[in-house]
Amino acid sequence: MSGPSRASREAVAMKSVFVTVGTTSFDELVACVSSRATLQNSELGSTEMYSTSHMGSTAILRRLGYRKLVLQIGKGRVVPDSFASTTFSLIVYRYKNSLKEDIKRADLIISHAGAGSCLEALEEGKPLVVVVNEKLMDNHQLELARQLHKEGYLFYCSCSTLLELLRSVDLSSLRRFPPGKPEMFSEFLDKVVGFEK
Image (cartoon, rainbow, N blue to C red; front, side):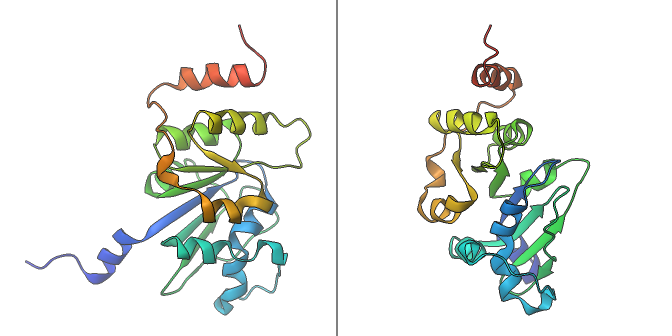
């Protein structure tokens, strides 16, 4: 009886990042995490060029050992093409009925700061980097991310600081969110947005 094939061993060893923007759009985040793949891989066929300030996110992900980026883009207008090469793959989709499988498979989650997305990632015990959308006027998401960071559960940043954060943080320093306690998260969220009882 032979062992697993080389392809299946490589698939198991392939560290992956899951990026989610939830049900809305966050084009700046999508462009930030996908721009290097778009610019470096001619097989994409895309002529869209993004700001050079965003160049390098996939290079950093590769340097950190990640070989797969799964990108959930919601209703955004920035739509990178999926591709697979020998060193990196990018899978792009708008929506699924559930993100649970993508979250379970990921070694790192990069998410918008929506409470539902944060809770789903934290309950799965995955390292979480939250990217706050600075264009939102009434930004309770920033307050939520700041408090969860203060508690040691996640790192947060903006699109303009994501690359530096990925270069510099130690994901193993994050605390594990207590599983099976959504009411704790709900109470925590109530405090952040000022609904304390």
